[in-house]
Length: 412
Image 1 (cartoon, rainbow, N blue to C red):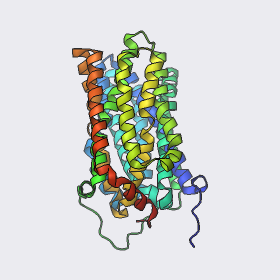
Image 2 (cartoon, rainbow, N blue to C red; image 1 turned 90 degrees about the vertical axis):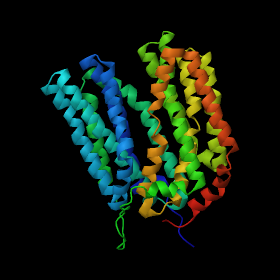
Image 3 (cartoon, rainbow, N blue to C red; image 1 turned 30 degrees about the vertical axis):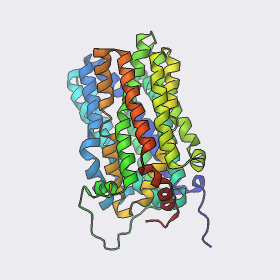
């Protein structure tokens, strides 16, 4: 009889990974808030602030697939250490630019740093998804992914208010803190003993599109990837929409910040509940339930004007998302061969996040041209359509059996 695996809380390598990446996630939230605040203060230009935000998201489109190849060719732990150190070096350029130049000279540096910061995120995100199954037992994958989801949403709750506070102390402080968080992540990764890859003479991967083809051949993973791609613009646009509604009804900047914290708190609560809910729900129930909760929450924006209530509605929409993510990611990671992990995670990241940028853009255009009510109705119609598609999809019927087999077999 094989020995039972250690609980994750006693798995030294997983705890080191979780702690280091959690610290880095909080640091990233600090700078995420500070980028637009800094550009607006230096240039008074919303367009330039938007350009910097775009620069930070652009690496997802440009670099996800090449990052997957690197994650499969190289040792993932060492690759994450190298990218974390690169992120720390890049972030220090912002305080240097602030000390050395005027605002007009500094903002191109900020845009370049934001792009590098986004590239570090893509590389770390893809590599970590392939490293986790090397540190935990196959039966613990779902719990490990759920804990990582809790880490992400926890950073989203704590990071933005802290980022604003640090920015108020001095403009460079959030970027210095983010650089330090990268150093903590690199140190934690360097202390991990497991996760090293033994190739046994297998050829290094070179096919950038193999991960995408692998996903496309698996009906349920293909469906979920496309469903998430279709729904991500709703989530990204929803945050801008509730900010616009709250501000139109007199909410202060601090109240808007509290509203966004409440909204992220829904995802954090869902992530804490994910291990327990994952044992009671099938993946199909989670995917369909998430789709209908989003569809049910959006129409209430027609009558909800209070900032705290708006935050609560978004929190409800986000509640099941970590549960779904933990289930689908654990199935995908459990099924993918180790030699293909990086490219599979990269392909999923590219497709799932490919249209996320369109959400705020479409919401902004619709609110400006047609008003809030039309925008809410458009989002409500789209989310209802996605919920119906998820409910009627035959692809999700395969998920329970495939999910169970992927988590109970031998490590790949």
